[in-house]
Every structure is written in structure tokens, then in C-alpha cells.
Image (cartoon, one colour):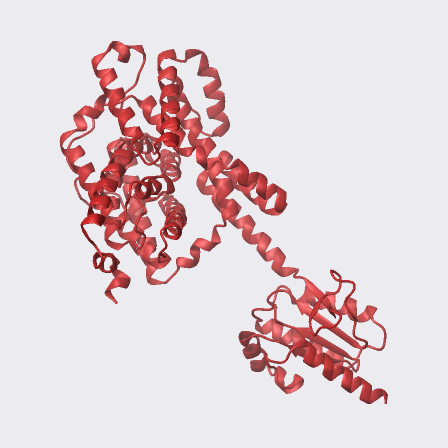
Length: 561
């Protein structure tokens, strides 16, 4: 269907004048929010301010045509801007033009990855970066970003290659703090926070930007050590293919992959949040295509990777956006500003941009969630802390990948040593639960009931075997039947099926019968392919543990009589 590829087909059918008015107001409000934020994020990425505006202008325009979210706003984000700034620094060797070209190339490679992921239906990749990793990553990113902006707040140069170096440099330069700049920055932060609480969704940032420009342009305040963004080229971005190729830049592939993962995770998370609030659903696979095309367009338009951020999307939603047309109105507003008002921005003090970034990132450090993780699950807390420390010491890319790898290793460890539960019957019922957790359960004489609470795979067979035989050898000689409850085993591989076959043979040698209950379809298929039904008889999903217990008791009673 056309709507699967081109979502506007769905919402254009119900479009009306009232919706148009809401989207128009939301678009102008989003542009008023996005212009100062994109200027700030571009400086965080180490790029001239206009590159951030290009991302908002082009990214939002193309996402509106293909995105499945009705309120998601696309543009530069703090995390991706920091990742671009810190990673490209070593690639560009101080050449600002090469820096910009690498940033655009990164967006293009990102786009290629997203489109390939769309074609291959890889939208499930979002699940490989857990919420726990994101908690630590965001906290680390918040501190890292904050340290890059604090020197601007104090009116000093700053410096340093990593977290500790930046702290040391900041402390050493504090005596050189420019008091007027610092007071101006603190007042800006206070007004932004106060404005967010008292007038949520309103373009407080653009009001501060306009006021600060007028102040520096008409008074002698600029002589007190204020740095400004300088001249911003007027006009729309020129479209051309990035001048560099992948082979020209060592390290651009992992950088693009990191941007892609962060962008997709951030966009889908924000999109789902807003979709739930507004009672509709988004298509994660369609988001791959939309982000891919949006970033390809940004790459051709001299921008750097963009994503859907929750803060900018919340502004769009709060301002009344009903459809992605609000992004088109925002892009049109930004285009007008680029054509006619860039000269007005040259006296914008950088301390205002620093204040905007510092206020925008304060929600990234979620102390409540970190405390919650520590309270309920120490292991997940440690994963979050690995991401947190990794981002601070080695940077965003390495920190996130390190935490993701640790998460996968912990998952593998948990799967390699699954719970092998021995069950007893709940008195007066036909239900069976773990007897170690429920010691009042009834043990069935001559019958051992086992539940394996994971898939049965080549790397956990030996552990399961050890647990089973420890229990079997500890039982009395009266053991006649072992029932495997496979209801909690979603799949079994060939090695697992062969392990069960050998278990049957070994148990038969001891005159013990092996029975399988409630096996799932994939498990049954593999067991049949390995010939287990020839040994065990028909393996059926409908055969319950209690059915086999009743049968075992009947056979045992018959033999004893």
C-alpha cells in the first residue's frame, strides 16, 4: 500500500482548516525554539553555527514526508552533536572545512546504513541498546556536554582532551572569569528554567536571543569580554555531494554507526512517547526510511547527522502540532530567517548558547532512575555505571558500545547457566511450581519434575546436564520417571535435542523413563527432526505436566501390584 511508504496519505485525508492552524502555530513556535538550539548544538559539534540550522531546515522537511510520527521534530541533538565534535576533532586536524565535510559524509553514511536496515527489516536493532545503558549514557553525556559549555559560561577559554583534563583546565582558568559574562549567563539560565515552568512550550529561548542581541548591539556591554557567534552566511544551503569519500576518512564508519544507533534509539523512543500520549502508533521500520532519507538530504545540504529529540518534539507537541506539516512550516520559517535575518544574529553572545545547552541537558542526568536501578537491580545499575564512566573517560561511542557489550555478555552468562527448577504439586490443584520457592508443595513419589527456564542451546546443555544428574544421583532408588516441563523453553537447537536424546538413553539404562510436557512448536519440530519421537513417543503441546504425573503414578502402581 502507498500509505506504508508515504504516511501523509493517511493524515491528509482528515486534514482541515483547524488542523492547519494548529500546525502553522506549532511550526513557527518550533522554529523559534529550534534556531537558537541548533546554533548552540552546532558549536557543540565544533561546526559553524549555520550548520545546525541547516539540519533543522532540511531534516525536518524530508522527515515530514516519510515519518510515521505526527509530532516528532527532527534536528541536531546534544548527544549526536557532542559525538560529532569529539570524534571528528582527531580526523580534521584543525581544518574547519575538512571538519564540515567529514560531518556531512557521516550523515550520508548514516543514511546508507538506515536505508539498508529498512530494506533488511532490521528495526529490531533498537532492542540491543537497553534502557539501562541509555540511563548511564545520558548521565555521562550530560556531564561531558556540561564541561564543554561551562568555560563559555565563565567567559574563559577552557580546553582539555577528556573529562579529567577539562575539569583541570576549568579550575586553573577560574581566576580569569569574566564577571559580566558569568552573571549574564546565570541570569539566562534562570530565565530559561523559570520560563519552562511558567510557560511550557513557549519560545522563551528566542526571546532571550533577540533581547541579548539588542543589548550587545546598542550598549557597551560587548566591551566586557563577551564573545559572539560572528557573521553567519545568509541564504539557503547549497546542495552538493560531500567532497570526501569513505576511503578518505579513517574512522567514519564506526562514527556513522554510532550516530545511526543513537539517532534511531532517540527518535523511536521520543516518537513512541508522543504517539502514546496522542493515541496512535508509529512504525519503527518506517522510521528507518524517514531518518535515512532525512540524513541523506542533510548530507547534501552541508549539515551533520540529525535525529528526533524528545525536548524539541515536546515543544512541537505542546505548541499544538497535529501532523508532520508543522515541520514544513518550521522549515519555511527557518528558511525566511536564513534569507533575511542572519545579519541580525552576528552579535548573539556565545554565553547565551551555552546557557541554552546547559538547560536543555539537565534532564539527561536522571538521578531518580539511577537510584531506582540501584534499589531494584544491582546488575543493571552496574551496567548503567559502566556506560556512565565509559562515556566520561573514553567518549560517547566507546562508552555506549562498552556498556552494550557488557549487557550482551551478562545475557549470555545468564543463558549459559539457566534456572533448572524442580517442581512439586500445589496441594489440592493440578498446578506445579518450584519446590525450592514453595516448600509446601507435594513431591510425587517416584517422579521428578524438571522445568528448564530458558532455551536449550549448545552452550548451556552441559550446565543443565550437571544440574539434572546432581539431582538424579541424590534421589533414592525409587525414582522411575523424569518429566521435563518445556513450557519455559522457547527454542532448542540441534545440540540441545541431541542432549535430550542422550539423556533418554542414559536414563533408560537406569530403568528411568523420560517424558516431555508442554513443548512449544519450534521445540517440537527440532525434537522430531532429531528422532526423539521415535524414543519418547508423540511430543505434544497439549500434554500437560499433570497428565504425565497421573500416567506415571498409574504405571508405578500397576508395577508395584
